[in-house]
Length: 105
Image 1 (cartoon, one colour):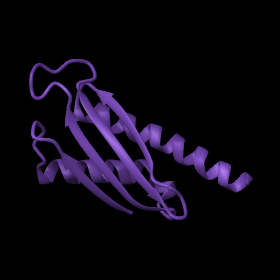
Image 2: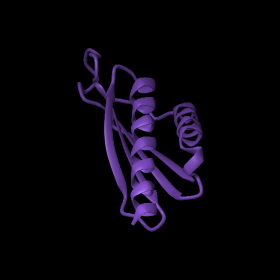
Image 3: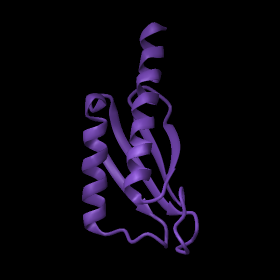
Image 4: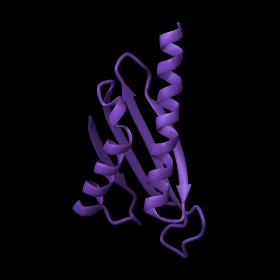
């Protein structure tokens, strides 16, 4: 599973951030690794670098599953950790639901 990290101008896209985010996402979605070809992560600061508020950091995940349309969702958190972990939890449930519907079809 390939994980690509993209940040806006207000979040510093360091190698350490990319490695941490990539390993967190891979660990959280590991049970689907055989079906996932790529995960694109878009991190943005909704307050444009001003005062952080609850939910000012947004993580948009676009996950590509073999044989399916891309799955896209957003999650907001007070910091990068909350935004990424919240988004990966949601994505795990969405993939479960999507694959479950396919298996029942």
